[in-house]
Image (tube, rainbow, N blue to C red):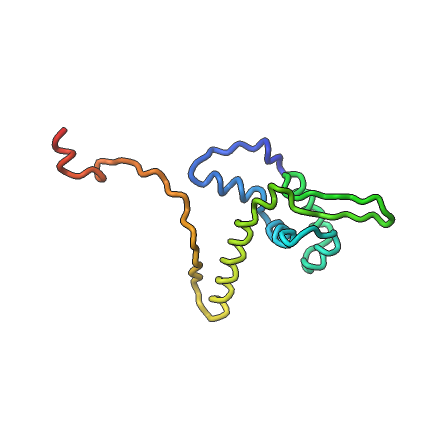
Length: 147
């Protein structure tokens, strides 16, 4: 994984979305975060919940999430060693995003099961409004002729 702390963003309109996706991209990270929303889990508990993931891939995804500060790993000095994973405060701050993905996906799957071809997700929040730009077309004709 590239060093995300060194990555520079151009901060265009989609910049915050790009930065967020850089942290949770891939097939498994958002799903891992979803399961960790319920509380601290051991490695094998996570693996059982993600039946199709390999041990190697789960290890890699957890390390990447830990590297960017979304997940913490606690190692207990026991035999056999016990390792627990939990969301950090930064990881927990993604809860609304993960829950929104769940809500959208649930609506999509419901429509798909009913034979709908185009999903129409219900989004209750609006995107941040972009600042309007003035153009000659947006100024009333009377105001343009008085100058």
